[in-house]
Image 1 (tube, rainbow, N blue to C red):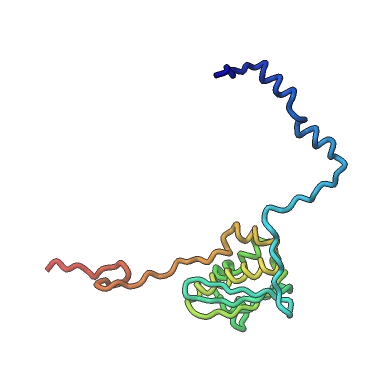
Image 2 (cartoon, helix red, strand yellow; image 1 turned 180 degrees about the horizontal axis):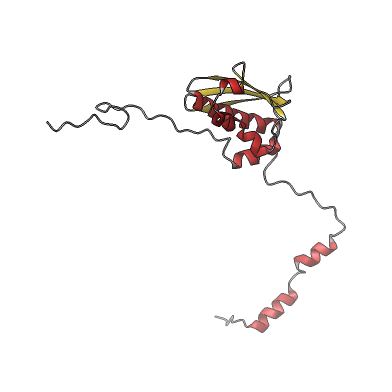
Length: 178
């Protein structure tokens, strides 16, 4: 067998015979056109109907909201009534307006929503979910801001079912010692 031991001087002679480094290749290709940098995530297409509205469905608990968003003065109509009439509690109106606050679009879009099922709190959550989905369809650039706040994700928490032998889902009947 031959002795193939190499030293640092042998390594220096090997690199001297090596092809030109990448920096030299880049300098010779400096006059070549540079390709544009692609964004990391492809921008989605705007989805609007023939009337210039974006449509989305929002869900929360047992409530389902169908929501249409179009440019306007900021009027929100729920089941044919103004939001102040339908959602009398101010906290519910705050919930509905959260997507506009995050995207800094207060008063720029009109919303028409029809809601069925559930109670008022679930309906407000469903409208919020629908508005966030429709906003991201109308202005795809807003999707990352709305998604970062978690408004595009459906809140899957629902009421636990009642179990047999129990008063409610987990509450047992009152214990009687005698």
